[in-house]
Length: 354
Image (cartoon, rainbow, N blue to C red; front, top):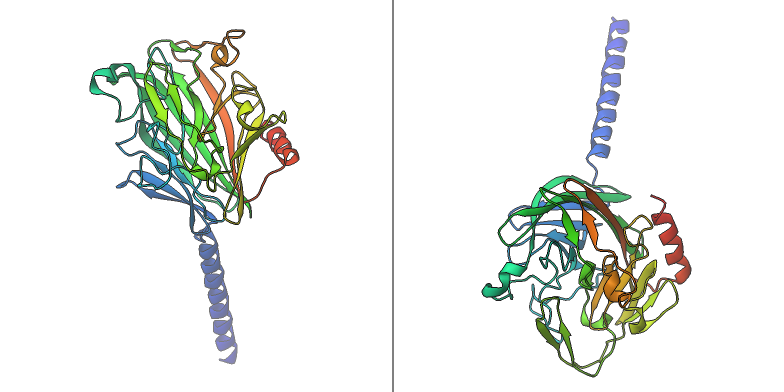
């Protein structure tokens, strides 16, 4: 009898240990990840949270003409993207309403301007502009080292005809003082060839908050590919201390129209040093890219505008035949510190290995 009781206790004990182990495995499999993607279909967005705090959101509302990442927040919690036109703002410029968050498009695709399109375009002129529409979320994956979001978009002409299919993979990573985004974008020509005519309006762009602009005490006037004029007013420079520097040690506004492996925009907001760096990739068409980096807060990498930036010495006019594709890879780093040339050179080399 005692033997039978001992055996029963042994069986029960083993079963309890097995249940505990199974429970632990379930806890591990469902444990909260450091980098988490939170899907919100009703509000047409996916939030990217790092340790529970917002880093950025992939948004695709009806009032902008392409999906974007907005806002973008530093590891210490400072928003570095301009609020206009999505949120009320004080002391920011209210020019170029198509400059929203971080985006990817181009100014001349089969003659259509995808870059400058917004709800501000007059109805009579909208026949010259293209729209990028979010199509579907392919997959999401949370993780402690990285989180991945894969999406599909359609590049549409004014008659809603699909010119290009876009497939983009975002890879979000986080270190203590630096977050990063890899944007790997593949464009696939649809039922006819696609021509990306050399144009200064492109391609991976971000519009930054006032403190990251270069100080300027004069107004300016800018003209887009269709001849539309935008006036940029002079504003108070208090707290405005942005400065570009590129991989060739060219600084300030001289970075505009130069080729480089990367460009870093630094600033300080209150007690926080900030770096916003965009890294090119050796495999990209037009490498090394030209930089469409403006003092008023537009920061863009444009590998396809060669004729414009070289004053006619070079040209590209990238063409995709029906069914062919091209892939662009960029890394964006947002740091709560001033990143060194050595660290960015190393990042470029590591990034370009893949």
